[in-house]
Length: 89
Image (cartoon, rainbow, N blue to C red; front, side):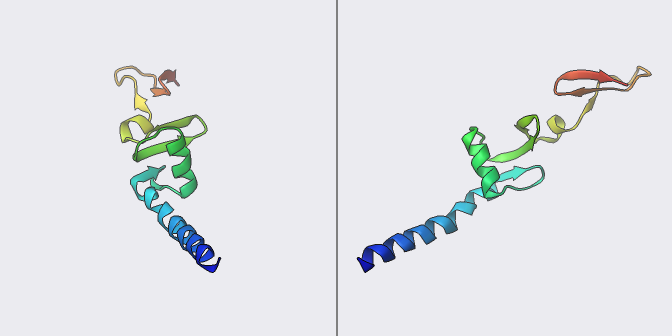
């Protein structure tokens, strides 16, 4: 009985100590992902990499996708694309 309890405890300690190893391959909003964020990303099928997680959902974290882009420089209005929707001032 003591051997099985000791083995179960050792397996639990080993399992819990190795779980945060996945967090190093995920970056969320510019910081290393927490275990909860890794669980959210893997549950949604996200591959290791850089991600942006906000109120709108999960998006790739490449710089071009996460920052608003100017629509045109020649017009006097200031226009930006946000979530593929053109917004102008």
